[in-house]
Length: 168
Image (tube, rainbow, N blue to C red; front, top):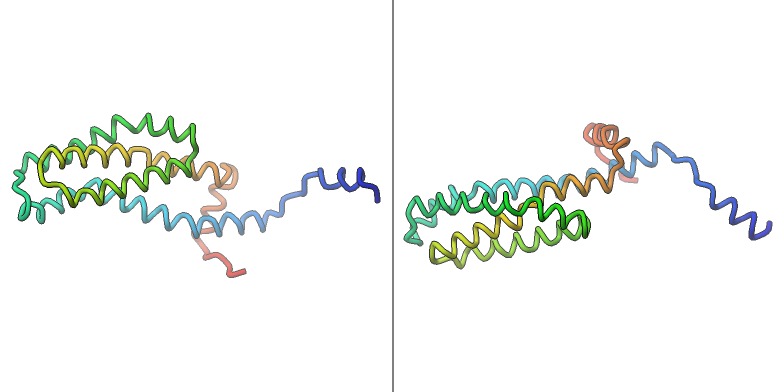
């Protein structure tokens, strides 16, 4: 067999094995979806947690109800203002790097909340939380479009929700 014939044979695309493709999508769904679901639940809790944190923070910080209300609102101002720029950056550098940036900066800012002592620091921290969290949900959606073609998305998600992945 000559090299030219071997090269020509390999350049032809192989027909897809539908069972193998669905198995791969099922494994991906079972490994990535729980992680992203947990991250989204944490994002939701981060948006609403100021009401719960206020109960403990009132004992240690001399903030009034107006400070907590403004801090909650400032979060959404940052979220609103930076959702589109975050999505533009997401399109430019990709979903993985964007989600990494969001998770690291968001985590650092959430951890920095323990050092807040003045209302100004509280406002800045809440604004930054909104800024850093702004592209999270659109980033997840774009990440899904990279990993699962639209033609297989419904079929793959439906089959993976009905049965756990095989151990093979």
